[in-house]
Image 1 (cartoon, helix red, strand yellow):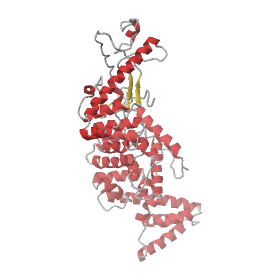
Image 2 (cartoon, rainbow, N blue to C red; image 1 turned 45 degrees about the vertical axis):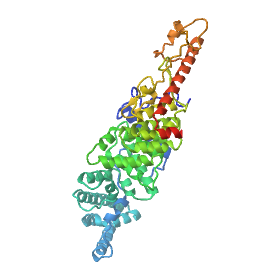
Image 3 (tube, rainbow, N blue to C red; image 1 turned 90 degrees about the horizontal axis):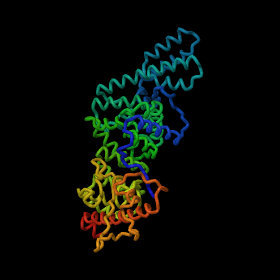
Image 4 (tube, rainbow, N blue to C red; image 1 turned 135 degrees about the vertical axis):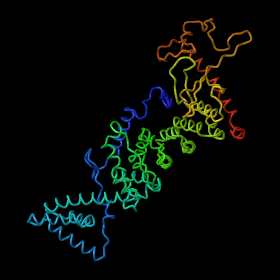
Amino acid sequence: MIGSFSQPWPNRHRSPAYGSLAYRTLVWCVLVAAAHLWGGDGRGTNAIGQEPVAPPEIRATAETPATGTPAADEMAEQARRLVDGLRSDQFAVRELASEQLFRLGPACLPILRATRRQSSDTEQSDRLDRIIDSLAQQNLESRIRSFLQGGPSELENWPELEKWFGDSPRIRELFVDLYREHPYLVDALGGTPQQLSMGLSRVHRRLIERGVGPRETPQRVDLIALLLPMTDPNFQAGPQYDLIVASLLQLYPANDFRKDAVFGEPFMRMVAKWMSRSDMSIREQVLRLALQWKMDIGLTLAVETLKQNPDPILLCRCMQTISRQGTREHAVLLAAYINDPTVVFQKRYLGVRGGEVQVGDVAAASIALLNSVPVTEIGFAEPAEHPIFGIIYEELVVPLKVPKKSADGDDDSNEDKDGDTAESADDQFLDEDDLTPLQPGDLSPKEIARLIEHAKRREAARVEIRLRALELVPAAAAEAL
């Protein structure tokens, strides 16, 4: 049986709360497992706990002086002479050269880096490393100060964030945080699919290094770093990254982010764009999130997914979403599944609360909800409505139809002719309100026969439920069926 004994969605009684240690541990496992799946040679990866260092390419454009002018040519020649002085055999000459290179400032960084790559002199290389690191940091901080004060941006790929969030002091602060925490990703924005893939891989490694999951919840810039490349129309990250995003969005920082007065609306647009491009393998998680956050994209995705003949479980998730976000006209789509007998949930109890839930049951309940009709009014034994998820189909209960009575008052059902009736001890064990767990192998032949009778009575009730549901489908749709 498909989906037999699966857990309810959502499992309101037993599942850990989102943001709890158990859930964050699950997110950590997803991140680490993804690392093994993707592999990679690990080149350029920082040691665990080490702060990321921005690659030279990120700052090359802003640091390169204008060439072709007398001042620039003179500065370049002076820098080359001073660089040669770094390998002098006289300590005073090396110190003076270092001091004067510091005074030249970040404009000489391209020359220093080019020399460092070719240098084989240990003393010169060591001094160049210290000078380059200091000037690069000085230049970056200078550009950041100017940027935060509202000046023209000299930070690469600022427009990639600005097009989503606009320009404001808080947005600029967010971009600076993104620039510091995920510099390789910022450098890759707007680039080729290969560059975006490499940048996203560095984000993933950084999250693992920081222990995002069991030890640390994601920061806002982590969510932005994952979503920005995944909304690029020319780039497909793959289901592994979709799973990471879906997992991190369930943690409380994302929920807090979406409620922010400045960031909330553009962040939700970004999430909706990712959802529309996410892989089918995580569609169930995406639909759940769309319902939790009341995002209209959920209805669009559910309708599109129905057209792709999803597996029975995902099919029921789609019907749940449609029942919550759809209109009466969407009942037409669900009516096509009204007679589907595929089992999606098996209840292991005796009595009326036992039995199974079929795809057709979910379709009938969803049609009722679309028409604002309680599921109990079309024949289900208990309510199954939910304010967020529409219906909880695992809680649907098909009743046991009462057997018809013959003219002389006898039961028309197939009872034993020897007069053994419901007053027997065995039948009392199968009381309709019994919640005793069903244990295979412990039932007597009479008990098994009574369970079969219950199944027949339940099926008779199921037929009536579905007929009542079809009466709620708009007339034109009913004729088409």
